[in-house]
Length: 328
Image 1 (cartoon, helix red, strand yellow):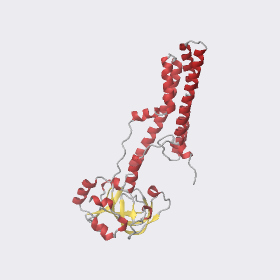
Image 2: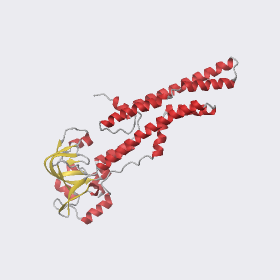
Image 3: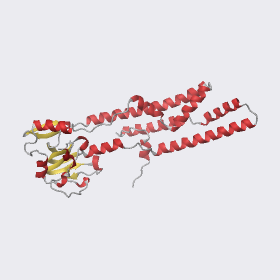
Image 4: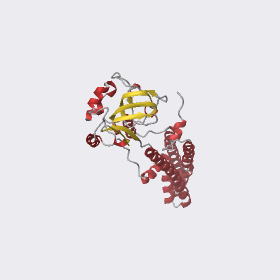
């Protein structure tokens, strides 16, 4: 049965699809076969990426080049017993981290609540009877009945349709509902053009149809997309790139000026201890302590505005990335 997941269902006749899945259009699967396939294929749910613990999420707020510089400056000023300066720098860094942590934690909770609200039921034929079951209990071979307003619970090969239209924007990005139909399509038909297929997480906008489950859980098209997203590297946004570049340049400039100041003072006969204190004061004074907090607060305001428009943003820099997009 594992080879089921690799079939090109859109290219097979309806009769062959039903026979291959060892099911029946009028009776569906019996209870024994359902239990066997649930054991074999697992629940019809997408495996969620393990979440980050609150402690790790908070510590990640300090993972910024400019914050590293500020922390180094705070440590040095503490070593020199400049408690006021050290306290101010530590306070700015802490406020910056707290704001970022609160915003990201709120986004994570909102995403979790949204995913829980999207749990659906499915109308199936099992043992010759029409039943309504949780979508997580579906298995390959189940006969599913669709009607207007239903969320497609798994990847289906449509066996019969009547004026069926499905909104596939969550999968293909196409904003216009697609008119579905049964029948055979060429082997090389692109996913967006497979009119005899209905894919998990899409929405039925009109009509009725009968389909057979051909893929569940992570094996669905939306499940594969989820796996690709989970395995993708975290890319730097335009803002984080600019801040990292600025932080590196600022570090080199501060160290350069400090070195020049120290050498000039020694050449003029000043005490090395006094010059070291002066150089540290110069370096600390040149660091823009308020920049990280200002950037974080600005982005948090943008996230709050997006939230009022029902848009959930998890990472603060994503707001600036959205602002950097342009119409093609």
